Amino acid sequence: MLTEIPAEQFAATVEAVASEVLAEVEWSGPPVDLLAVAERLGLVVARDTAMNVRARFVRLSPMGGGPMGRGPAGRDKVDRAGRGTIMLADDPRPERRQWAVAHEVGESLAFRVFSRLEVSLIDIPPTGRERVANYLASCLLLPREWLAAEGEAVGWDLLELKQVFSTASHELIARRMLEMSPPVMITLFDQGALQWRRCNVGRRPPSLTSAEASVWRAAFESGQATEFEENALPEGINQIRCWPVHEPGWRREILRTELVDW
Image (cartoon, rainbow, N blue to C red; front, side):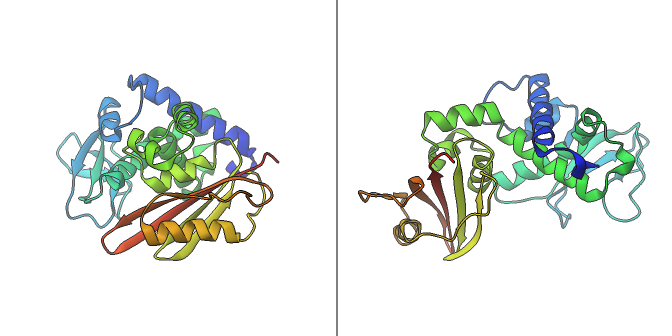
């Protein structure tokens, strides 16, 4: 079962599969367009404006019997002679469309990860397959080697990374920072409220410091990227920066706190 596999082995396996897939479709650098990747993998991407989910993977019957595959009750049978198709709902945000397709591509490729880990598909619950599909989606949109190189080149500036990896959302880039070096804490605020706060050094993150709060508040109020500029940073912290992701009617800020090596 997946829970018995060491986290490092699981992560390395998913990263390797994602890297191999991009090599197979001859994708050489960011940004990664998952709609194009899906087509290069032989999948069809089709719009379905009537869906109440962002995307789903089906196989279209070669005999004209319609879509069959993972989806609503009554469509659980898979016509393996059919062609894999990703049905994509309309969404005004291109990053959401990219993520939806990335997730479905991850679903279609999850068997590669399970095979590498020597885990039987029979033993995988739906939550396990979903976990692998989500991780593969992140690794396809933000390949580790490319993100690590670009991150170091721009000092992990979120807005600059978004320019390079334009098909990934700000939040997804921030989450992937937690899987890279150096040690950091990432905190996300929505509408003035803390939504989540995580650390990549294997411990529960401490409460927000007054220095972090002041940097976040400045970004929230000004709509500009901010950084802690006083002489003395709090103990154990190398840098504090915050980036606003504001739009009409909604304010989101992402705070990155770089830590002293522990």
